[in-house]
Length: 300
Length: 300
Image (tube, rainbow over all chains, first blue to last red; front, side, top):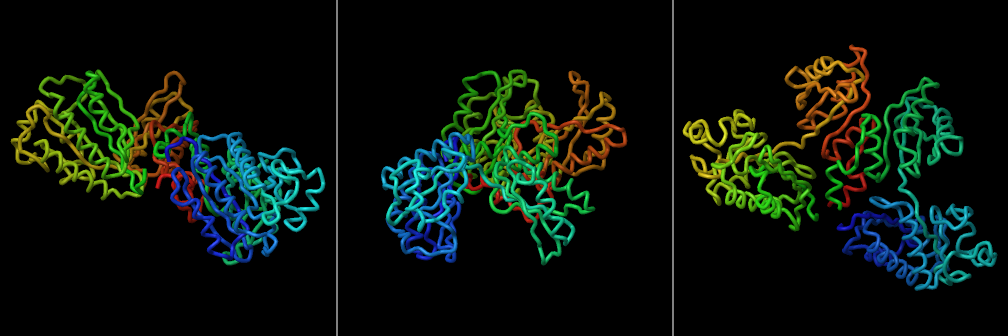
């Protein structure tokens, strides 16, 4: 990786059964200069594949555009069945700023990809999340409501004119949702009680919907085997809703039930900055810069 | 960087005044595949230059051997003056394991370099720190005592036969000390008092010498401008003496003086793992792996 800027993309493709097709799409991301395939998982029940790839913005953009083209060619939504809601052969393509990159730059990149795939593959594109053109289009579920089967009727309504591309669905590939979001941190805090209602009550207080932290979704979850419960959270912008803040709020709310925090877990990947921010808070670091982290110099 | 293993080297050269010579040495580390020059600083009073370079083990080894050869050629210790103690044109060469590398592997690498430079440049080499052949040679100051001027007499004593190379000093380049050590974390904790004796008393309790943490050196320091004091620490193996443990011990000792920790600072570079370890402790993370840190996948 020679570039300073690193962006992540997690495209979702509507193919999780035909492994030959899966490989055709995934292979685009292999052995490409400036692009690194981190993970992919194809789910048969969902009939869907999620790819996680990082790279330099320009290189990643080109790879994603290429993969979208292949998916449009080989996936036929008129014959698609699966448990997961979907409206396109390429269903959703979020770009996520990882390093030396602002949200605005990720938005700009997502719009470039949106315009290119709309023009090149004659594909309607909706912009979502941080790239959304109206508040109504921020939420993926709202855009996707009606799915592929309802897309023709939905697009007949001028309110659902796509941001790029033709005013009707691609006959076999439907439409695609493209945009930018912050990296999501899946963070769970364990409590030394088996009462799910306590975890639920705490979750309601710390999450945005209940008047809590702006970029926090939360719910109570039972860990039956261990006989405890946890507050399971999704932090959708750790730069504004820090891990330690969510952690401390859960602890404070747990106090009133006489319940203690007995551990926590991060599920999946987490950006380095989210953890450094946490260490810096608890130590009370003054004037600390991530440039002081030795490894950041290995990524430039 | 394509290799999994990353090692750091911080060679000290006995030239801090002639910038042409400084550049000749530093240039070895520029634009080399698998090697990255992080920093160098030449000090006129010390007449000494410290280079910080990281890279893949094999590439870094070759670059260091090359730089040692140039320094031996162009630095003449018989004409060297400076405030810093020194016994060689290349004074000391520590290798530091950074990523996917054990201390043992860093020791092995340092010995390869030691043997190569001894053979190639007819240079006596002493192994030190984790690479030392006897406990007496672990400490750099002990090996260097007597400096370049006293080296001939010192080496006449069989006790000071070098680990590699000839039994007498190189006529102009003296001898070199090579070895492996853990990354050093310079960590200072600020206290809300102006009484230096309190910082000193705490320093004595938390440091190894006073019965404290094994890999902790510490002393009290006055921050006159701010009217406070700090416990200034060097953590010489953060994998065994964690930052958070040193921090909490200082806090606990400060309690008995009615003094509070009001901030902290990390000076210079710090390995990512040292901070992640700290975040994991305070959050109480269960089963966290550094592989979950997104950026680690960008360095492989």
